[in-house]
Length: 115
Image 1 (cartoon, helix red, strand yellow):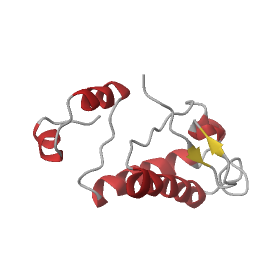
Image 2: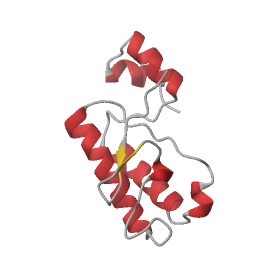
Image 3: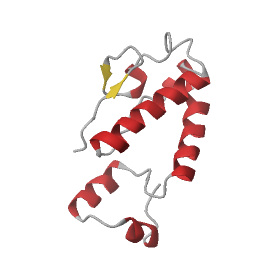
Image 4: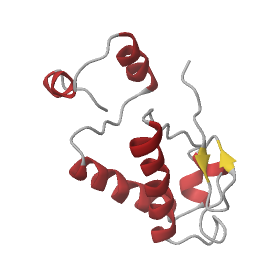
C-alpha cells in the first residue's frame, strides 16, 4: 500500500487527491499559473521539509474539468526534472520496491528508474 500523503489547497485545507484541492480563487477559474504555483508549493513542502514522496493521485476527469491543470502539470514536471537531478516520477510499485531496497541516486540513474 502507498499512503495518500496530503496536499494543501490554496484555501489551506488538506486534500488527499489533487482534484479535491481548491486552487486559486476556485479550481474551475484557476489559471495555468495558479495551478503551477499550487503544484510547486506542495512539491516544496515535501522536497524541502517533509522529505517523503509526493503522491500525485487524481481522477483523469480533473484534466477535463479544470482545463488549466494539465498544461500546468506538464510544464511543472518538465521544470522539476530540469532543476533537480534527484527528483523521480515513479509508479507506486517502484516506490514500494525502493522502500524495500533503497538505491542511491546514481544507482537509480544506472538502472534507468522512472516512468
